[in-house]
Image (cartoon, rainbow, N blue to C red; front, side, top):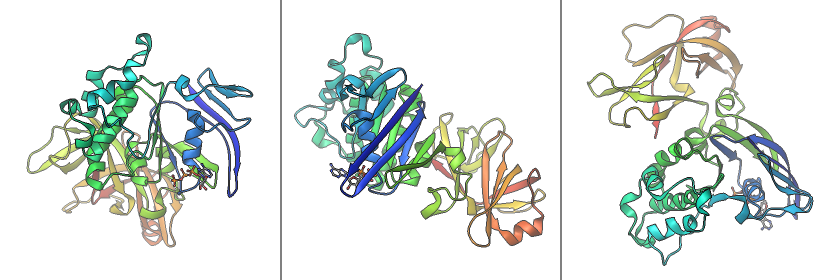
Length: 355
Ligand SMILES: Nc1ncnc2c1ncn2[C@@H]1O[C@H](COP(=O)(O)OP(=O)(O)OP(=O)(O)O)[C@@H](O)[C@H]1O
């Protein structure tokens, strides 16, 4: 199933020209600088922006083609904007059920109990919406959109109005959303952190054009990834917290790879992501003994590419097929004689669990 969009739009100081077909599973991020056209593209998907001669198809449904135009309320789309748009005179329950009641019974796929559980808002049902934190309000907004049983959920910078604490609170719920609800998500963001936590694929935009669209894993292995512009190269590994040793540590990973991380960061068993800054990873030709670094994993070098002046990015395949990248100096790379296909050991100085 795909979402295909072909559209050209001219404003006084802005031109949009896109032609893209996106697979629709998991989370797709639209990423780019302010003003590059992310919201405009999202609005075209929703039917909020009616662009002449645009074409929009969702699976085998034609939403726009020639004179044929399906309005938003018939597209079965849920939308959550930057600022919550809850109805102030209704309680949380009233807001959640607003779209649900208006959805024909035959189309209802998600119900109140499962959505409130999924978003951790069951205890808030009788609260008025002006007595919620920013993060709670956004969770209710997502819940309200989901309860209309959308076939697609569009999120327009849903976290950007939240402070760090509220962001941290809502992230784990968002990251479980597609897996638990089964609804594909397209999310506008200009935060690399949100992409790394939530996205399965990324659409990069620049000046009204799509410069590339690729899986998150692919973009994390190319040195010119726009995600690296501010914070440097990172890699993201999938796994879950496993039962582990005591002494303040827990295991993260799967049956093939294991990291030691601090205990108490996350519940066991839930799929999670681990973010590792590539300059926190060193490479050794042989296993290193008597070293303070806790995590040392064998990798097979897949690619060595120039990164910043004097530095290279070494991408290595872990035993489970995921890719770990190390940013090292060209000098070390030469000295160690690193080359593709070589089996080496990655020493990881620090990791962050993305909740
Ligand atoms: N209703 C409008 N009328 C005229 N110009 C608009 C309108 N909405 C947006 N624009 C302009 O169109 C361009 C693209 O805007 P858009 O909101 O799609 O960008 P964006 O990438 O979502 O930005 P941001 O990250 O700041 O939300 C910008 O130059 C903006 O100023």
